Length: 407
Image (tube, rainbow, N blue to C red; front, top):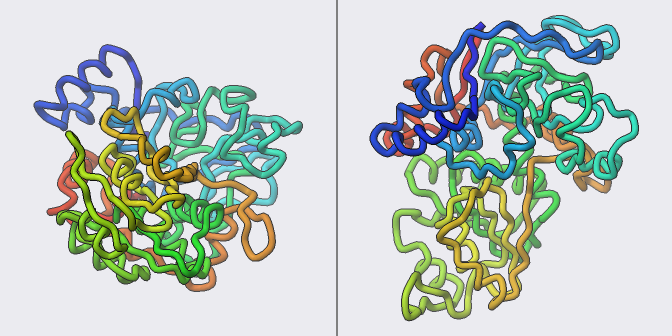
């Protein structure tokens, strides 16, 4: 079968870093670390696993950041190469191991990608998995699998950028019958925003800023509204189609990301922008109460720190890399609280209980939460080059969520 894989061979990595400045296409045409290959179908690691036939494999910013070699190498020891991309997924059961529970061939499912203790064959859970905090599992290099924090980053599991991938039964969730495939493929990215909204909720009287109206920014907004937040939520959006989506999802105000939005936020919150001896302007007074940073770039992180009020909170939701242009002084000067929302887990505080984010998300979708319209572009796997080219020109192509489609 065909699969889009990432192989971190050093010569390919170095070539990609240099050559992408001339043509981004070298990053996916086989000359750098990413290429489409013919690969054999993986066998089940043991009889606690299932094989899934892919319906949709979502294209995530983490995937494209890895492909562009922007992602920090910090997590590379917790990956195994070559891995098949694709952690956002929906598909149908194609094979069931003898001890994989009561799943039936043909059932429609989504897979929680975290390869935590149970998926790795441990019955004595690490301290975090024992608390349900599987996103912080300490054994993602151990057990019955090669290293990998999750499906799509481990050579032994495959990923949804191929016709089939594998999952331990503890990772598998049935998709309710009336939840569409387009909605189901968004469960994983929606749980990212859900984790941020449940672990770090704003108060009802607070003003919230969401930096970025890409998929994660929009789904963080959707999650805040889905859990009942009545906060005043402003969204920084660069494009009209993103602004329209944010309004539909419940944004109170849209801040034009192509304008002088720092000055606009200062004006709205009673602050003023001051010019230091050198460098970017700083805000005196004012600022929003809570900022959810959903981009992960230096500029977005830097602005999030500058635009949050003294003793306010910044929640890092976007995946950062090695920062070169972030001034961390506002954390000290304004005594900011900085938190990070990493994936999701089984200990989300929801309606007085601790529950798995995937369960909550699927329940919300079964009860009417419709995010399917955010899937704007579908591609056959053979069309991967065109898909990545359109993602490079998001403003013109108006891509919100792109997926690979399989029959």
